[in-house]
Image (cartoon, rainbow, N blue to C red; front, side, top):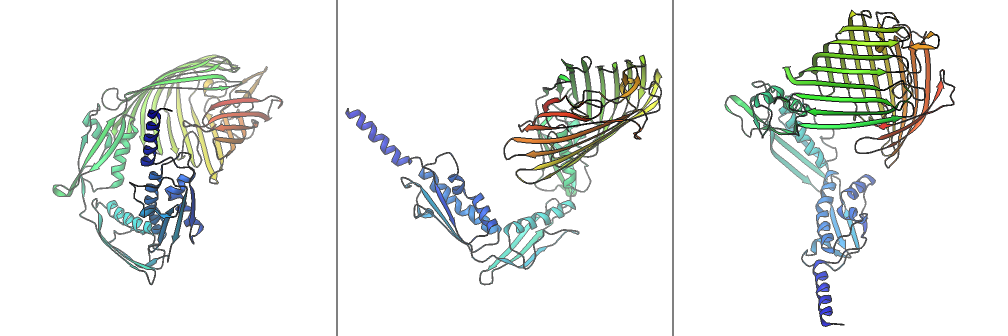
Length: 599
């Protein structure tokens, strides 16, 4: 054994003494007369308890540091439950953590004992706050005799100052607070004094940040009502208008520290541009409908005014049994804040081919219109369009040219788009059409309504319901545009049945679409504690010759089960379905794979 090896080993030993050796699994014991709810919150707030279940090892020096930090963390939890005279002890292998110097930690730590004597739970003796803005609603529990939770004091300050801000007092603040704890009585007297400040108006909006969007367009899109009484909601709306263009990666509306002349409050919009271009693609496959592919390209700031140009392409029916290959190539230009800050202008053009089992259509459409964004949950649409099409179905070949006035609305109150668990969704479209050539005049309507409700916390169950309604009024079945008619069967209507297998039988083994459609779907979505989920579902579809479903048409239904695997971009969906009524004999089954829930 060489002297050099001995010297090196000694240096290693000294270094381990100075830095501390890695700790083994830490045993933590929490003691004290605590309610189950309080114990749970303390366990959730303690870093030592968190470390006891962690896989990563920590040095004794690090354990001493987190133990000393635990005093404040546990005390904050106790304050939030109204315990203002608690005694906290934290011992590491029998030594009080607060007495251990971080520069000379023990060589090892294997056990931590946390002892808590909460003492009396304080209640409000007096609970006063003022002056209050008219109509202020105080938090539940801020009154004499209730538990004096620290969070209640914070919530009360927030609620009362926000009430003043809602009335235009942008600089409302807590001027003073007097908190007196009477330990013998177990009471806390709270007296909060507010300073509402003057009622302010919006001053000029300024723009900060190096943006490729012209400043005047940023001001137009934001639509901040300069000169009107200050409103937090108006300020938030202005920020949301800038965000929904998709042009900016971040938007912040910054209030001036002091009001200017005439009690006007200056606002600065600090923006940062997102990447101007974006590309995306997707795909879906089913045993009958085959492979579907889609892609899009977006420019977010086409002419320097946050204008958006989206070009998209779709190909469907590759290798499927649904007729032939369908395709769509379209472009849509959208200019925000065209007529006012909440109304966008759009111009679109698209070419589409539908090569289905029962009909063929090749069409070209150009159109323009406006979209009114009432909120981030509600939109309204109105436009005009010209469509030229060549179609073929059981009634023969046809050419038509239509002038259309599409109108619609969307209410989207789902908590998430690809995997909704609560809320509802409603989309309704109404399209009067005037036949310039071929077909007949009429009205095309469609409604898609969905509702979601979830029960449970960890292993949740979501009930999802969907209803679809479609109608063509005016032209007879033989004179209606073939691509306006409705079919049932397939992944978007009734799973388990062949794609577009239900229509109107016109004899000779031929079917065409119906003038009325009704679709119903129900799912029960069960989620495990991990990423897997399980689904049971039932679908039903109705097609009729009449303009509105009256029961004289035909029904079909299907049912099945599915698997879901959660991913950051949404659940991967696998559904297997069989027909339960209709023309199919029930011996076949269909498989559907995609991203996101079925609806």
